[in-house]
Length: 75
Image (cartoon, rainbow, N blue to C red; front, side):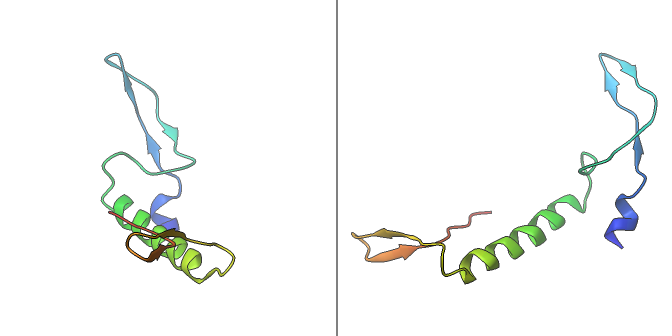
């Protein structure tokens, strides 16, 4: 469904007050697309899970707090 939404998108761009001809977007999303933040979070969630589950990726130990941080995520 997502692929269908983003396939064959055509846009015009305004540069210095002049509007270009329509052209196809091959990568990314249009500015202001309401799905863009959701897609970012979904992709980030998959990456986060893979990092947490990978035993070869080591974290950073903070001795004062006696804590090991493998991943810190702030959104």
